Length: 263
Image 1: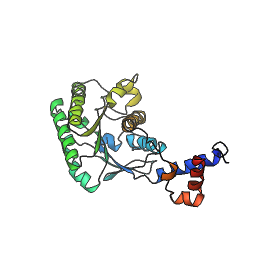
Image 2: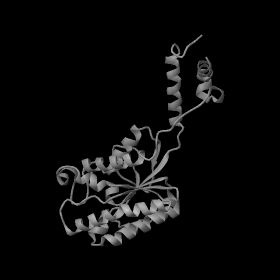
Image 3: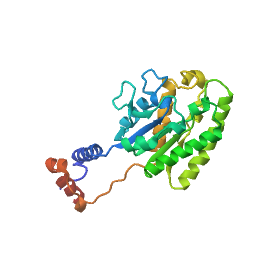
């Protein structure tokens, strides 16, 4: 009688084939990077901003995804689509149009830097962000929104005081929307920047935009927030429920695994 131990190499090869087959058959998650020139990638040497690093992280994790958007910027990675609009305020992002033309399942949203530069008060910007979140939810209630706090400015200023005030308002906004049924998560990028020693010199290209290291930090924050809510899938089956896919039919894996499990 063939035992599980003696069949171990074949068994493992079949399981690996199963997992690779399942991964290849995943429907890509449509992800829209949405925001201003930071989403566009200003200040990075490759013009891809956090998107290039996030692309690598998602790829290396085996996640099937597709960045979507009407704009394409960046180098050294193949999926450059996004909706990062340099100079835009929160109220200028036309999410109904963006989503109608390029539907998304996930939105990585960073906005507010230009509003603060134009002297808008934190409370008004918070309200504009809330209207933006509502517009996204109305366009497609199932969209998962990952809302970033506004990164700090390199120079201390009255605008930085308003930035801190705005960031302090965002947790309550996210909690209220989550309680109302929105799929929304806060990504505290600002806190990550400030946690780095000498962050103005280490992470910033200019007063407003990160450098490559700063964008890499942002990408890790987005990635960790995205993967955290979803536990890895659990797979269970019995020999009688095994339904061979094409690769199992041609390899003989289905019959031999079932025989091993029945033994």
